[in-house]
Length: 238
Image 1 (cartoon, rainbow, N blue to C red):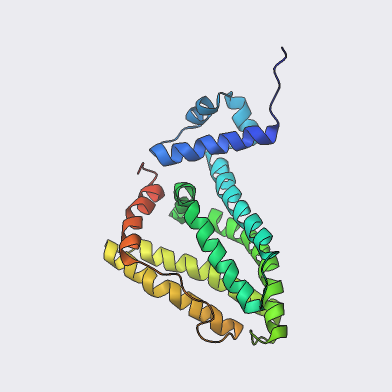
Image 2 (image 1 turned 180 degrees about the horizontal axis):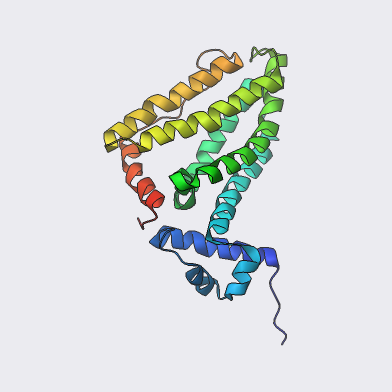
């Protein structure tokens, strides 16, 4: 019986799935290309057909995670009803829940973007994500302008400001938290910083105070997340 070859896209996904599991089990730094190919039963040539390097594999893994998030957000928004502000809040709540359901895959690759040597990679990915976020945010901001839940003079310009807050503001917040000396200090920075970002978003959009409810932040949970995050950042197994 003739062997059926898998579609290249399937092979690519299998390689990323195997790499993601290895990142969880032994850490990104310890993971080798040979281990990825052995886990999937393919030749190294197949790996290099899909990825130029181990770094290219990391970019693809993080990019796939973000693409899946944006696809889910865009699909969810098609069913959301209400004002522009209500749609915006629903989107934030959906994104939070989606990330929590996939925290293991996020922790295996996302922290690597915060390594100093990956700063350029982080900016490149954030620029690409900003394009999709802009397309998602703008209709909500325009609707909020029309229905009065947002007080904005220029919806496109305001949307860009919100993107700057979310992408660069949150990155700066997490950089500061990761530089903390203790778990308590790490948790305190996030407990204070995340609501502050939401308040700033309300003010940029001209929304009523309290429009965007901050997720309930438990300091103990945040403290417990610091060690796994640092382990992923350093490329060591959890």
